[in-house]
Image (cartoon, rainbow, N blue to C red; front, side):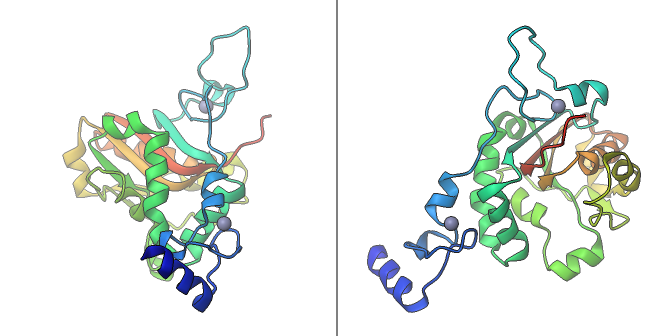
Length: 239
Ligand SMILES: [Zn+2]
Ligand SMILES: [Zn+2]
């Protein structure tokens, strides 16, 4: 029945993959083709124990933390992502965020859970990184909340965003950090998370500045440990 429906839909609607634009042979299985999902460039060990970035394999040291995290220890205790913000993962996130394909939250969250199983099982609740009110209204949804809903944890809206800092992609890391500091405030539901481990959720980790600003606000509210799970992470140039 499904094969028949797939064939009919493929002929009638000629749907294309939301990520790569090639014809979708099985439209009933979702809006992204199997080859895009199978070509995800997932992060593989060795990974930095703190930020989850790929560690350069070195034969002589047993360092488990990357040079960036050694220099500037993040406020987020551990972070993980499915892969680097590139290729098909980037295209899938783009289709999810800007292409109206909110159904992609579930398969993305499934892969996030695989990338950060222990972070999820250690956490009391998933806290989506909030959008500023005006941005949420213009997009119609918060992509981080959609992802958080499919991680198998209770979702706690424990933060509000006081300023819209989401257009800062072009800023250098230091300015980004200053720009985002104190942009978040804990809500009343943060009180219930005092003394616990909390999982911050977002679609993309760029420099880590936003996640750290959120973690700082949560820790000020008494959260003991803040871990973070994102769909992708931007590779920062080493310098
Ligand atoms: Zn595709
Ligand atoms: Zn690191």
